Length: 124
Image 1 (cartoon, rainbow, N blue to C red):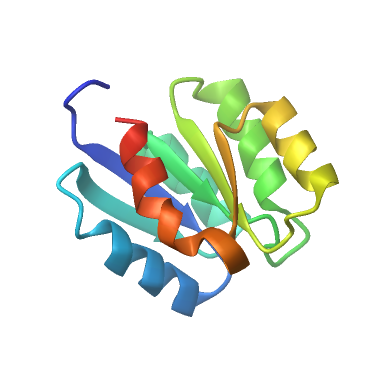
Image 2: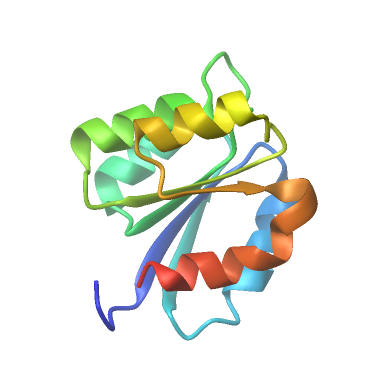
C-alpha cells in the first residue's frame, strides 16, 4: 500500500462519531475516500463491494452483531484490509481479543480520538 491513497470504511452506531471521524480523516492527503456504515449487514455489503484498505470498527453495533463479528469476517475474507478497532469498550479483554483476531490497532475513543488520523495514515 506504499504511496497509495486509502479507501477507509468507518463502522459506528453513532452518526455523530462517524461525522467527527470523517472530518478528522478528510484533512489527510493519504485518504482517497471514506465510506460509512452504522450496522453489520450494511458494513458487510460495503466490504464485499469496495474492499477497503482500512476498516475502523466500533465494537458495539445494533441488531445483535458487533464490530468483532466484522473483524472476523474481514480477516477470513479480505486479509489485506487493515483493521483499527475504535471503541469505548477499551477493556484489556476486548483489546487482547481484537488484537489476537488480527486487528492492527486498538484505540480507546474516550482517550485517544486525536491519534486516529495518525494511526490510519501509518497504515499507508
